[in-house]
Length: 70
Image (cartoon, rainbow, N blue to C red; front, side, top):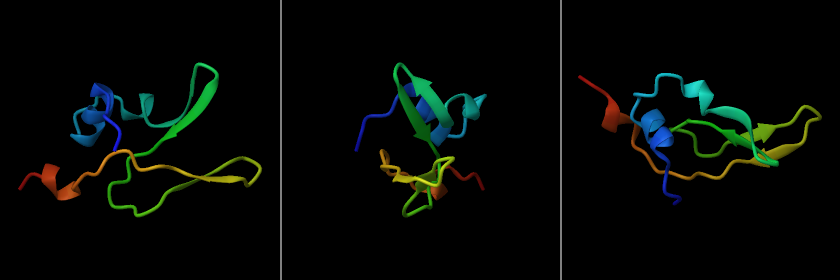
């Protein structure tokens, strides 16, 4: 698994003030990146505007219930 940035950990821990600043489709230099936070998904595919698909790689294992407050 990849080491996450502080911004990504803020998403995972539910304390990011503007999650869509980080999540979604973004340009990073000359690359386009797609980030999603779907902790219970077993697979995620991104679908382009012309129907092309790409499977997103899981970069962090999280237990959704670990951050749930009772």
